[in-house]
Length: 283
Image 1 (cartoon, rainbow, N blue to C red):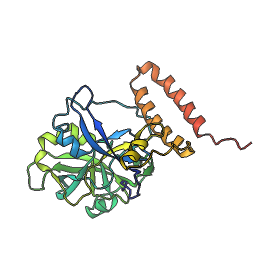
Image 2 (image 1 turned 90 degrees about the vertical axis):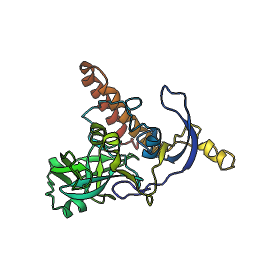
Image 3 (image 1 turned 90 degrees about the horizontal axis):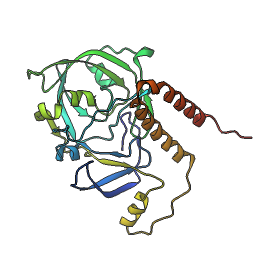
Image 4 (image 1 turned 45 degrees about the vertical axis):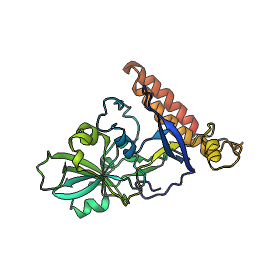
């Protein structure tokens, strides 16, 4: 499976598990692709979210959460080549955009930006770090500003938006639309006729993070008709992947604290991160 910057990650297999939305009794048996590292415990694919009307009626299940702006990296959860695409136009040019409800930012490939003749600003202040689903990072190439973008084909009289895009080298698609662009404009409802499925894509996967101390590995082996192997001893890499997830959750928790408590909580978190990142003594 490919990350947005073209790097490849490998799953450890698949597992079928029951899934239900919080506060609802209906359960869905879903096939989850198991990732060895992930910044989220579970990621639901657009195909499943659409089939359950979660995207067209988000008020029941999707909640807005305000997170700390101190977090250096912006998240970009796109993985592989999703089935769902959006017909869009950028500066009068038709583009098949990828919707990413887990993305914090609008992203455009360096190659596509140059093809459109957009001016790319590459100064230090125009670059940022993106965090991918496996916890890895990539620095953007720069930014393009005041791009005229709208849902639909160029000749359609759709409401235009002036958007800024982060530019990423090696991006495997021309454009990625952020969660704010999608939910803020009620895109899955208002512009539903401009969404379509690419039958030649790899499909929209549901993902789950492999945990060293849970039964996913045992269940996966059981489904393969094998005896469950012993859970291996933890490695520094396992500790690191847990720390990546913990930092994200702690940033979310601090953002929910009263403002008077946030500064102290951030300082305590800074010290903890500093201690974790400190090289181990060799004696």
